[in-house]
Length: 92
Image 1 (tube, one colour):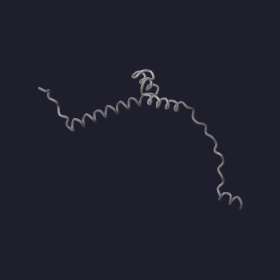
Image 2 (cartoon, rainbow, N blue to C red):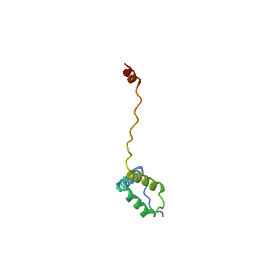
Image 3 (cartoon, rainbow, N blue to C red):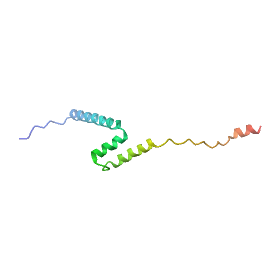
Image 4 (tube, rainbow, N blue to C red):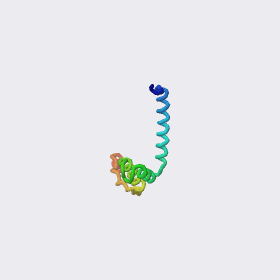
């Protein structure tokens, strides 16, 4: 005799999907709250030193470089060309 299986109804699937979405959102928020260096350390703990998640490691490394880069120096703009109206007024 087969064991009784619970039927998969739309209601059950909807509840399961909503609970999984809530868990995923909580995981994403917890990951985003970690500093960038802690994210790299967590990846190393989960997968091994430099193993796997190459795109994510590259993205985090790029964010670290941008964060630590000195602000660009403001360069003076060359003087703009005088407008035709300005030249005419100067002639008068």
